[in-house]
Structures are given as C-alpha cells and as structure tokens.
Amino acid sequence: MDPRIDLLSKMMNSMNSMPDAEASAEFAKSVPSVLHNFDEYELPRVCYYTFVTEEEHGKKLLRCSRCQRAFYVSREAQKEHWKYHKDSCRRVDSEALETIASYNLKELQTMFGNLLAQCSGIKGKILAKNGVSSAVFPIVVRISELMRAQDSYSADAGNHLHGICRTYIFCADDKISWRIWGIPGMTQFLLFGEDLLTENVRKRRDYFDDGLPSTEYIDLVLERDDPELAERARKLHEDEDSVGMWTGVNGAMEFCYLYFNLILCAAVRARKSMCSIHDGDGNIRQIGRLPEVATRRALELWSDRLVMESCGDAMAPGASIGVTAMNKWCPKEEDLSADFDGELAPGLTFDAAVICALKEFDESGAALQYTELLMCKPEMRSSVIWDSITMIRRARVCLSIISFLMNNPLGATTGFSDKRFSNDIWYQILDAAVGSGVTKLSVWEMAANHSCLGPKGMGHNDDVRAFFHFLLRRHEREEDVRNVKGLLVAWNATPDLPLAKPKTESQMKSATEKLKCLELAQGPILHADYLNYFDKDSKHSQDYEAHVKKLFGEIPQESREEILDMIKKGESRFNAIEILKAAGRL
Image (cartoon, rainbow, N blue to C red; front, side, top):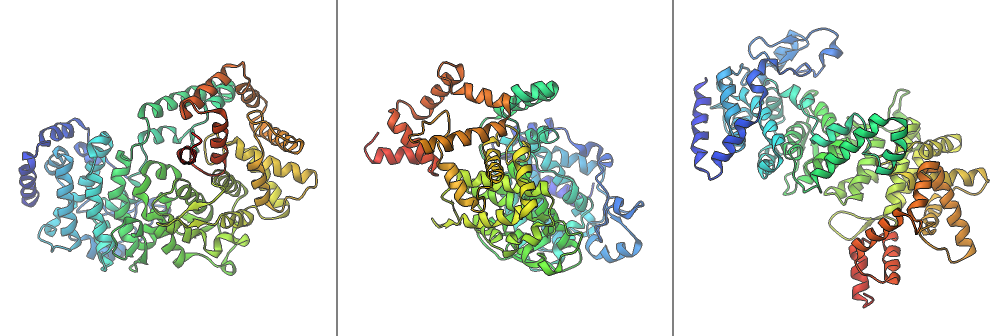
C-alpha cells in the first residue's frame, strides 16, 4: 500500500474514539462493496479530453496503460490531457481498496476532503504526488454505497460533503475542475455512474415514469387490461406507503450534495454566497469542452422529474445554472435550423424547463427567484421556438400548466418576499406552446385523450384533461375559445356535481357540462365509480364522510362549505380553518 494512504489510514483510525465509531464501523462492514472486485466495475468509456464516448467514436478508445481507468480517442488527446491527469495517474492496489471498503462514512468523508484538496492544488501537492489522489474515485463509490445502504445513518454527512464540494464552485482557476475530472474513473462516474434516484423511484421508473396510477385506475382499468401490471402497481403502492411521508433525508439526496456539486464546479465559476441556490449564478468556465459537458450533465439531472423527486433541495443550484446557461447558449429565433429540438441550453429543453419551474412553484421550492427569471425570458414565449417541439411534449406542458393554474388560481409567492409571480406568464407560455389553428386543436386533443401525459400518474389527471375536453366541445359548438384564462376561471368557479348543489339554472347548466367533460376524461368505468363515490347509500360515500371528519373534525356543515370554498380559491386548509377561527365562526 502507498505509504501516504497508510498515513491517512492511521489518521482515520484515530477517529475510533468517537462514541458512534464502533457502531458505524460494524455497519460499514455489513454493506457489500464493488471495491472487493473493482477491476470488474466498468462504466461506459469516454475520452477524458474530448468527452466523446466509445459508442460515438465507433471503435475502442485507447486506455491509459498506467492507471487503467482513463480513456482517449487518440494519443494526441492523451498528450493534451496529461497536464490534468498526471498527478493522479496511478492504479489503486487491492490492499488500498480493501482498506477503503472497511472505513465508515465519517472516515471516508474526511479522507475525501483531504485528497480532493491535494489533487486540486488548493493545499499544495504533498499527497497528490505519485498518484495517491487516484483513491478519490473508489472513496466516492464507497460513500455512495454507504449512503444508499441506510438512509438514516448518513444524516449530516451530505451537509459536510456539500461544504467540501462547494469550495470548488467558487475557485477562479478553471484548471482545478479539469484535475478533479482527470482523476482515474471520475469522468465516467460523473457522467454515467449515478442516476440519483431513491430505490422506490428506481423500482417504478420502468413501468410508471409519470407516477403511480390511482388505486381506482389500478382496480378498474389496469386489472382489466393488464392484471400483471396492476399487481405490480399495487406492490409499488405498498412499498411507498411503507416508507411513509418524506422526511427530507434519503441516501440519494445526501449523495447528490457531493455528486451534483462536483459536476457544477466544472460548469460554472459562481459568485460566493451563503446559500447554495446561487451556486449556478456566475460565469460558464472557459477551458476546453468540459464546461459545456458538465453543464449538460447538470441540467439533464435538474430537469429529470424523477431525480428532482428523489433529491429535492439538493438540486437547488439547478435553476440558477439554468439561467446562466440560457444567457450563454439560448438560441435566437433567426438562428434556428431545421434540426432544432427545442434545447435552450445544453441538457435543458424548453418543455423540461417549464415543467421543472412549475414543480418549483407548486412546492414553493428553494430556487423560486431563479425559476422566475427563467420563465420571464422572452424566448420562453416564442411560438417559433415552440413550433419546433413535438406535439406530445407540448401537450405534456399544457397539462402541467393547467394543473398548476387550477391549484394556484391566485399565483404563487416567489423569492423571499410576499410578491406573487403573475399567472399571466403561464398563460403566455401556454399560448405559445399550443400554437394556433390545426396545431392548437391537435395539442388539445392529445392533452384531453392521453391519461399518461399529465403531471401525475394515470387516474390522477382526469380533472385537468376534462378542461381540455371542455375547450374542444366549445370549439365544436363554434363558441369562443380564445380567452383560455377567462374560461379556466369560470371552470374553477363552476360547482362540481354531484358533490355541490348549483343554486341557479345557469350554474346547473355549467355544472352538467363540467360533469360531462369529466366523464369523457375518466371513461365510463371510472366515471361510474366516481358517481358511486357520492351516492349517499354507497360505501364510497360513507368513506368520504369519514375522510372529511378526519380532516376537519366536528365542524358545522356551513363552516365546512366555507373552508372548501376558500381551498378552491387557493388557500391552504390550515389557513382556511385559522381564518374562520379568527372571525369567530368556529
């Protein structure tokens, strides 16, 4: 074993006096590791200098004969990259790998911080000489294994690693990120080695990418069409229920603090700040292709709804680097070519940016101020740009926007103030996304008739799809459909049959039309089940009353109706109850 690694091992052993050291050491031993057979741990090969993959190159890449982990398209590329790779170019021996595999998480994060600092040159190159920093890659792999093995064990480790990696985002020297990515194994790992998904999200990714179907949809539709898939969906529901409410900490999210920031530091030189939401706000780095490649990887992760679901606020810098990247790369209308696919910056398409922004607003995410900046860009409302995006992607955006507007009719609070982001921006983006004429009707029809395109799983989007049936039916009757905003306001104000009781003939007519549109969205089987839900003598109705009582307690009927009205207008249930209490009506 290299004497420097041995020295660090002794340093780590001195940490065993910590109260939880024995327990964490036992836990580390219980977690399997690829480090025991590390030669078999292969990731897709990519050139460390040009970032061309072996598949793109069309033939085998050249392998670095010394470290065996770096690859190149040519000897010339290897020579150009040597200045970044030479200090870490060394093969990690099996004894060192076994030692790393035995460390607990606290030991690993300390060793990671020390070696990364030496490799980058921030604290000199005492340990980096002769390649000891090549151990960074197996250390990072082992950190990932431990964090994912037991989520609760990794508490606070993510914050510590986050602090280590943020240091490099603020470094003025663009060569530092090249040296970090030049460590044997790191380029492949940062580009292909992690999906950042929780285990439950991974399980359902291949079957229900948009979210789990509703239980009614599973029992009444999937069971009929595909019993095996229905059973799988029930099992996935059970798995998610067993996890319980999300508590803010999971292994994927904790590791994301390390992984995402090592990518980010190669993309942008950020302005120093106390809050990580600003970590993408700065200037794109300049040397070679790495900044663009890292930006693409960062924005691909941020715009992946499954990654966002898994990692939450660990992805907070995504919106700010989206703004920075858009300022540099966003195409102008006059520059669009025939093969333009709607990409506003490397790794971020217009439709993905809108859906990410809606999620941030809907959940009052940490990066709202940058999301607002992103949505206010004139290009987001360019019909020419949206015309280059496929119908199905545009329909998905339309469903997501209408779903958000239904749930947030008053707009959403932005930034760190009580200022509300105008919903007019969403209507302008909606108009640009749907287009006009035949295109508009095609997008509406796709949104109305595809249950899998909505922001949630099948069976959860029927109320949103019903609105698009409403627009299509008005068009068929040659009624005005130009003012979508006014129509949506009227739709939200229309009573829901059979739950509500319209007070006028006009209200009854509108409510009946709304119910008909919901029937078209749900289909006959689900709609019959929906009506049965509100039949006073049915079990559904009894379950519904029990649910209301559980939510509101013993609240008089009049007050309950007031609360429901306020919820429809955008107030939370908690605020609605507090308002009535303050007014002395509860």
